[in-house]
Image 1 (cartoon, rainbow, N blue to C red):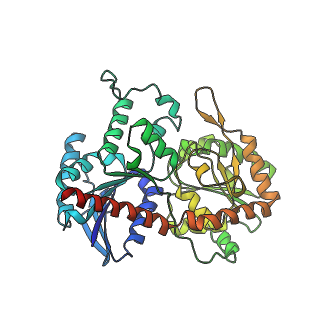
Image 2: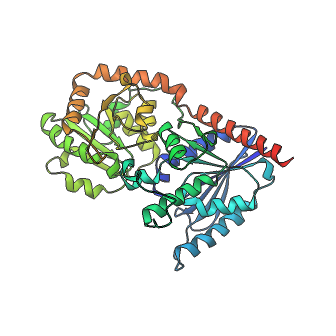
Image 3: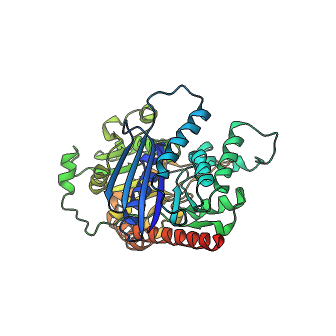
Length: 418
C-alpha cells in the first residue's frame, strides 16, 4: 500500500480549478486498491478545530484551520504553523519508502522544505500557474531582463521569482498541465527536462447529457425560454479578459434584446459593475457558487466564453466541454493546447508593442451574433471537442499518468537506497 499526501492550502485559486484538480485526483486515486490518499487541507477557514475524517477506507481528509488571530511576524508564524502541520502528518506516515508527498502551490515552500528534511520520500508538485504570469497579466516579456542570479537585484519581484525557482528545485518531480508551462520551467528556471512531465487536467464526463431540463433550469434561475445566454465561469479577475466581455455585452444588449450574460464566480465584481454603463438588466453576477449550481448554469446556457489573457488547462473550460456547451475562447497559452480550430470559436488577441494583449471588442460581438444565427455550426464544434476530450481530458487518464510518475519515483527511490 502506497500512502499519498496531497496538500491543499486556502489560497484563492484552490477554491476554483486547483481545488477541482485536487478533489478529482484524490477521489479517482482512492478507488485504487494500491493507494491510500490523505487529503491535507491547511490554513482552512471552513473549520475552527483540527478535523480528521475518513471518507472511505482509502481516503482520509485532514483539515487544519487557520488561527483566528495571530500577532506574530509572517516568517515566525509560517515556521510554527508548518511545525503543526508536520506533527499531524507524521502520525500517518507508516513507511517512508512507500509514501509520496504531492504539493500544489509555491506558497507551500516552507512546508515542502520541512517535509523534505524530515522524510526520505519523493515529493511531487503540480505547477498550475507561474508567478510571473500573475504579476504581469501573462506578459512574460517583462521578465526577460530579470537576472535571478544577480545579487544586487533584490526587489519584491525578483525575490518572488527566486522563491518560485527554489520551490521547483526542491521537488523530485514536477507535473505541468500545459506544455507552455513545462517549457517555461525548463528554460527559465533551468529545470532538467526529465524532471518535468506534462499531464493535462482531467474531468469525469457524465454518461448521459439531456437537454430536456433546460427550460426547467431557465425557469428555476429566472431566465426566459427564448433568452440567448452566454456564460462565464471562473474568478472575476482582470486576467480573465472580462473587461472586453463587458464592453461587448454593452453592444450586444442593444443588438439582441433577449441577450443575457452570466458571470459565475467571485472576485472583483464591483470593478466590472463600474465598467458597466447601460446593460445592468442583462448581466447576472452569482458570486461563488457550488459545483451543482455551476453544472446547472452550464446546462441552461447557449454558449460559454473564456477570454483569458493566459491559461493553462482550465477546469471551467473542461466542465463546459463535458456538457457539450459551444465555446468562444481566446487563442492564448493553454487554450491553444485544448482546442483545434474546428472545435471552438477562437478570438485572436492583439499583441501590443510592450508584449501585452488586447482584444477587438467587435470580434467578440460578431462571435455572439454567429452563436445566435448559426447554432448548428457551434453545436457541431462542441460535439467534436467532446468526442476527443472524453479520452484526452478524462479524469482516469490524468490519474493513471500521475500514478505512473509516483511508481517511477518510488522504484528509483528503492534502488538508490540499496
